[in-house]
Amino acid sequence: MNSLRHFYVLTLMMIASCSNDTDDLVMEETTNDPVDSTSDNLPDISGYPIVGTGQSLSYDNNTIISLPASGFDFFGQNSNYLGTTPDYQDNGDGTVTDMVTGLMWTQSPDLNEDGVIDNSDKISQADAEREAALSTFAGYDDWRLPTIKELYSLAMFYGAEPEVFATAQGAAVPYINTDIFEFGYGDLDAGERIIDAQFASSTIYSSTTMNGDRTMFGFNFADGRIKGYPTDFNPTNPGEPNRFYVRYVRGNTSYGVNDFSDNGDGTITDNATGLMWKQDDEGSAILWEDALDHAENHEFAGYSDWRLPDAKELQSIMDYSRSPATTNSAAIDDLFNATQITNEAGQADYPMYWTNTTFSTLSQDNGTYAIYLCFGRAMGYINGEWLDVHGAGAQRSDPKTGNPDDYPEGHGPQGDAIRINNFVRLVRYAN
Image (cartoon, rainbow, N blue to C red):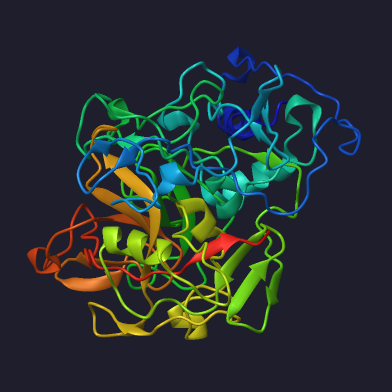
């Protein structure tokens, strides 16, 4: 049976078993004989090659500018360091191979194969893990639900998020290559918002959010964020598990696994990604433009080519098994040092770190925000109190300039903390 339909076929069978009209129920099934998964044509890639973010436009603190030159304002942003160009192969059988990472993906989240990507295609995180393990889609028997690092490899930051309560896409752009992958926004007819295109991962937060919710890290290809989502609470249908779009993956089981070496000089090399990191962060929170300038003019351990990491590079060193609440640490390997801060709730916590990647909202012309990664709690103001709303490991964005005092109750539906001044951890290519 085509296992992308397996869940829904099982559901129909259960309905039929309770009905007196089972003879009228017709179910089409497709069969694929599993192939030996070692004999396929996946590229011979191991390790953790990081795909570029796709962001080639340049920005100042507000809008698009010409590509900055070295020594000039705003040099050091993502457009100056494009990384590895994404390279996808459409296999013609409903799968796509990422030739950079060695991962093969299901091309469409149209789980029930009715030709429409909508609310009926969403399933719970637990069902997604079970269905992936059972799947023989396109003849392969080794599908899995991706980790958040695998899922994030598909993120393309030429995207622009729509307005939260928009009823049409407008000038928004999805955060995934829609020439290769099928994509659907949230289902307005089912009472969803257009931004409700959250995709499930297998990565469960080591702590909880919202004062006790079991939480999964997912990526939203409509609004361009990693957030922690409750697995057991459905905001649209309370009492039911939360439901998500899914995209299954196979191949390169070492993807997302770091291989750190302490170089003994205040630097850490990740042999899996080929990146060298400063062992310490820079110790204070600064504006985005200042972070770019600091990185480009920094010398340390005999190197002068330090830079601010892009969003995918910084996320690559996130350790999703760690959190302030469970390990009393930042969500990063203990080879690294992270400055301790006091968060909005008065708790001992760890910083949000700038990336060199601009985050566009409403249209690609808008460059007022930049992406950060939360290595401590992702705080938000909910029902009159500050809580960890999205988890240590979330990726959100902050205004590049402004006054954080203007946001005493955060911003957006979950009251995301707005700090504007964020911390910095520098990176360079190891070779």
